[in-house]
Length: 318
Image: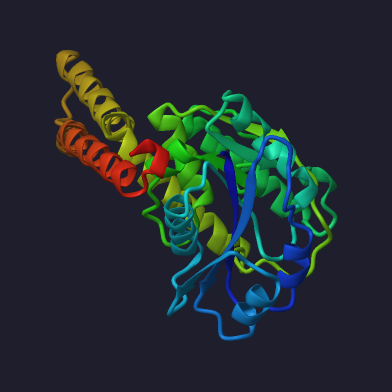
């Protein structure tokens, strides 16, 4: 039996949740059972009552608002516990077209992918400003660079996960899960792909992107943090190469003047060169230490994966 669970993180979504749920499927080709799961992230309105009235199969209640990333991970954990073979994540504001769920899960059913990201037609979305469209493309390009993937729409929340992929994911960032999970998947070598999807009209402004500068700042921090976590040696080598290279260049310049017998001592340049070389070497050493510590992280991830497999094992797997 193949079970699909569609999860929806919610925070004060009583106005749009009913419409979103009404468009979700209950039957799909290749799927034996479909269940709905709502994560109520400390809502203060009637989100919980709307979910119950619409016949939601599972409800995860978070006492306080913990943010989208925490709600997303709580949904994955609950879906795995409920025996999901495939998990689809969508938004409560009905941004994504539910009729595209079959296309979203198709690569997973074929076994050609473990994670599938829905790629929105960014250029055709009318309520996206030109600056937001540009930032979406720029952010996706940076994520592709950091993750070694070819995902054209990294911030998209419309995505599907296989059971095995969901067990391997961890989200450390409290702001959003979208960028972090793609970078993790790419660095872990998971099969990840993208399919084109459609979007519906805007029902409310985005709560995640409260301001463009804030979104850029948070996204950059997320990308740097994940890149440092999974590629620490490369990160610090790149970071340390700039002061080291500049320090060596200044040192060679000083040495050239010294060999030519110039009257000026140029001591400040020599001191600056020494400081820059020292900073560069220290950063590279830090990268080596972080790379050694990453071995422990990988061992802990393996232990966590084994525990999840044991805790969420389906009856036929025991």
